[in-house]
Length: 342
Image (tube, helix red, strand yellow):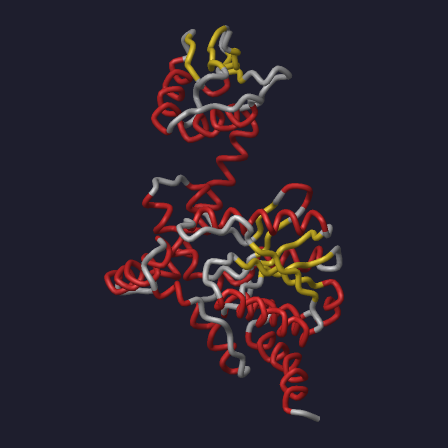
């Protein structure tokens, strides 16, 4: 047997070793519960970049659930922003998946450009995931976010004034359209634990050289802000952020349930205001946000405009508030409704 064939045959053994070090029992409890009740249904897909986290997740799934190999798909998105390195990432993912007997679906960003922002790249990647999961009737997409990602995301979203819903990201179980779900089992693990499992199994992964730079906000938070924050805290601040995320998700779910009960639109998409009168402002805010999303014509409201409309809803007096060129938010007879521009 050639050396290359030996290397290929060793991948299942490496997957088994990673699965033993990162077993389902160490995953987030919400993901464990989901797997225990629904693991036999439909296709599973893994978001695979070739980096340490996503590779560890692919190996943990392949080694931990060998019976699902025929129903496991890896989705790799080439952003085409790093030239030869990005192409090498794609080839690495293809070789690894072939060695594991896992189907790889690779996509490439046709709209890539040199000055692409983090938000643009993320939107393109998510659109690829959405398109491929829908086209292939994939029910579950596994993503490898871990505790360090929680802390980074929280610091980034605090900078832009996010509320509980935004600060509760990334969630372990995130429901999507058409019954699909995103699962993030590694939210109970730190980056160092994941890389330690890979090293113990003799696994190498791809490193994105741009992570060492400062062009993107997340990279600046990761390299400069997060280490300083942990040192200043003098404790396990990353675990603290993960615990805070759990609490925020609980609070967000409670507020959503409260809003469900009292903020019901009628058949003409009108929002009765009387049930909101005694509710906390957080519930009224959510009710208004839902009302705006339900309107067929959308709006051009800025953050300041939203706050002004919220104040008008709380006053409850008859008024007319511009939502841009399409029309107005109108309050009359104790209801909030959309009024077309003439």
